[in-house]
Figure 1 (cartoon, helix red, strand yellow):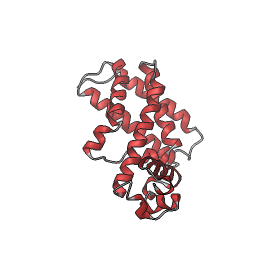
Figure 2 (cartoon, rainbow, N blue to C red):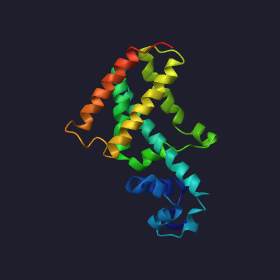
Figure 3 (cartoon, helix red, strand yellow):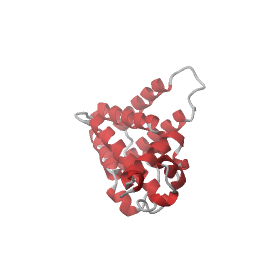
Figure 4 (cartoon, rainbow, N blue to C red):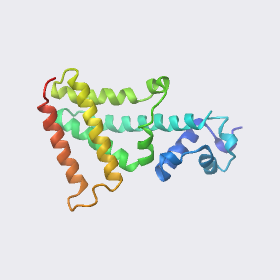
Length: 189
């Protein structure tokens, strides 16, 4: 019988909750074991290492984020799809800061291949179809979107936009309008 009902899925979910509460960098075997009121060694029967635990949180988070973005994109195209994608991304990052931080973890190639990372790339490229970009412009646009979304969320969460009177949400909307314009007027390589 598993102690405290321990399963890999429950351990990873507890680690994800811990990441959201205290930060992804605080996730440790000891911290998760305390949540279950067991010894660290009890976890190793279900999760091989701290690296595997953190990778599990990243895989879980990538799947959650992909599900939310996919639901937001349903039936949308062009600017509407761009805005829906961006807003779902931002909302997830703000509601789940530790989980979101885990999505930036470099995964082993076999783990990454089985994760939702490919779904993220496919959805990003799908919203770019409306802008009719060819390679290498499409790859550059994917990178611009990721850099913009990720950078904005990090600055917003860190209080980087708290110094002015304009809300960060209003600036976010302006940034999305600028991205839409930029994608529609992309300078061809």
